[in-house]
Picture: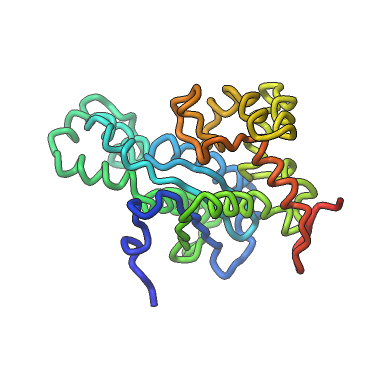
Length: 283
């Protein structure tokens, strides 16, 4: 029996949710086409995380399905001014001319929207809604592909699956599961080579800062790993692994006292475990 999403999502119970959505009939549609659909999803996730009051903690895009780990940040949306709500909504659904072509979000358009407080309240609610987040992730790609291939019909299965993540242990387990999907499927030999995953995004971000040695400090213990991780995740678009708000950051992370280096050690250990029917990294 189908359960309404409103009964499945309750931020008062948990703000973390693992979302899974599959291509129709589990066809390998994300791995097809002249355009890289996986890159499109990578870029779209980053864009949506900037617009919605929803943080992305992990993701993995495979040929026929994708995983997204999200955190609902309702307090962030509550702190937006009405004008910011309107401008954020305008990035998602810009005004259009008579030929349905998008127009720039002008000050006049913003002022007109601000005259309708009920509309602003609805937009604010939708900008913190997981259902609207997933809608804005899936629907544009479906329309894009159908238009390019001159076909009609569904691209993704109708509903996405959302699983509540209730505690820190589960949060780590789900995050690792998502990041190791390509390795378990035999697509990638090592996690850091897994294209279109949050683990590769995090490692590439550290490499761009030339701070790989700071990650290795976690091998000496969690305290050493945390001390070496100052500023390491401050500018990444993903939700930081370590919550350093009591130390030196204004950004809310996943876990206090658990550095990115410690998480990568967890990923390394987990990726070497044997599971029947799944690939693993050799010793």
